[in-house]
Length: 289
Image 1 (cartoon, rainbow, N blue to C red):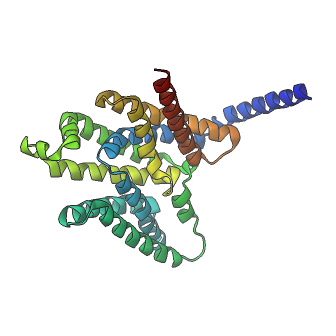
Image 2 (image 1 turned 120 degrees about the vertical axis):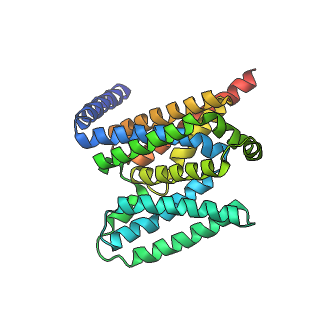
Image 3 (image 1 turned 135 degrees about the vertical axis):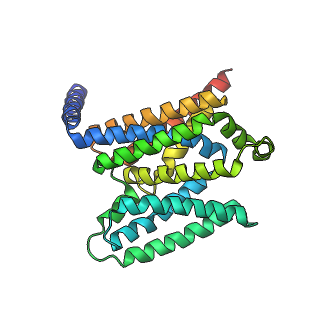
């Protein structure tokens, strides 16, 4: 009986692998894998600064507020992607401006603005008649639906982020560690802060189509958090974060294809399991030492 069960499992595994290989021949799957890897690299790169600057709630707020941009696009019969990008960018800049100009704590400002944006988004969504597939895609994501335009946008955001952050890496590190010292040394702190927020908002916007509003923050936080467990040296931390983000995205797509699971959640699940595995491994090493 056990032998029969094992044979069935092996046969099922072979079938799944063959199906996956056939699936990889389709252009939509190739675009999805390319998009996932690009977004994994982008998330790993920006995620380092997001975690160290404690901006995870900020990216979370931008992601949820994107519902307003998509709802507006549907109501105005425009491509939701082209409404999502400028809305996310403007929203991110306005939120940072409000944080700078009020005496309230940043999390309080984010909670207030997020609540207001969500309320507006839900009201606008209720005004949409008929098919609401675009809104469902925003909430839950559909990386298999990304097209060449989405790939180009993701690549442009990745190149812009890499150029901005890596060309000013020393200043960015100092700004992350101590903004006051950076200001004294003549670093244009506000310019760098707003520049980073613009890139972060755009990254959230392009990643929403892949994983949806509900999971977009995981792309920015989990790979960087996993890398931070392994290394506290910034350069290694940055490289590890990018590697973890890209590899986990690729593995998540393979898992999705093998077991016929939703792609975005599969990627996030792989990232989460990797974080848990690294955490447990480090604890076991610590106890053994």
